[in-house]
Length: 367
Image (cartoon, rainbow, N blue to C red; front, top):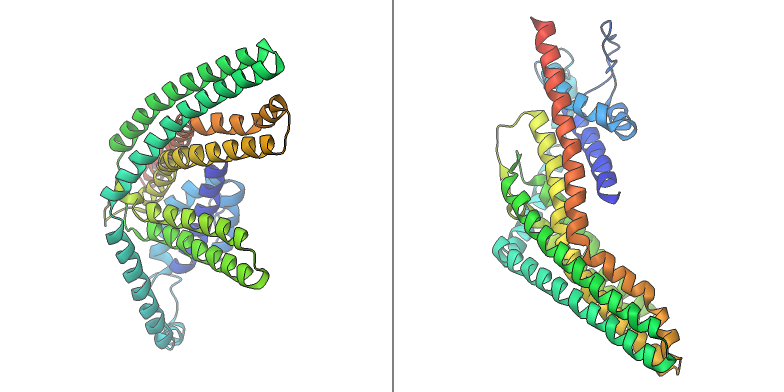
């Protein structure tokens, strides 16, 4: 549910800023008989997308070329000369922002050269290997715990539980391996198009800034409170977030996205939706490897702490059940990510159909 929500919010925000950049405003025009009322400003469009995305977003993409002709220079509702002169008085601010933009572009370029797509692909392959190996290790670990707990408590049921756990993890690992291959095929066979890489770079920049902010917060609290353990944990999370930003920076190459300058508005919107859908496959693979690794470490640590505190081993083993369930869910991420991708892509196909229907109706009315 998180990915569709992010797509809904992200595209609605894009609609708001895109409408502002075009200069869309309420003009007082009434809709033709039988047509939907679309006379509203950027905020109105954004709210409509948030509340009724499946209708409002395709409709905005369909109306966008007409809005450009109407509101941009030369159009019926284009800004008058005094407005343009007033806008030109801020050229110094634009020059300053251009310097900042060049600095950010240089930073992102350095990061991209340090972590090229080939390196990211190797890292993702490593995460996949770690995930599958960790799944088998988790199965064996559960069996060992079941055997020890059965011996210490004279319970044959705990031994059977260990056997059942191992079989479940073997089945999950098999399914995950097959669906990881399916995911690779889906990415390679589904080419997406964007007019610019600015969308990908903006998301990567936000993640990198969040990483730096998190590290700064951890450092500040460590200096103020002297909490070194907390700083280590926050630092680890910030490094993890930084790596997500680096992967996002290369998402275009990793997810088979081609930059195509001459794109229509509806093609641009569909490309963004496809990018969001395919990103679930990339994220699933990354979280699969890192999640299994962290889950195993956390599980083993809790077992050691419980036995160190002289707890009954069978009781300590029961306390690790939530951790093992989390590992099982993480081990199924390649399958779940593929399922989410297919559901999202079905929605994207519906959006494409609505755009085609709207275009056909428009041509019929024009004729």
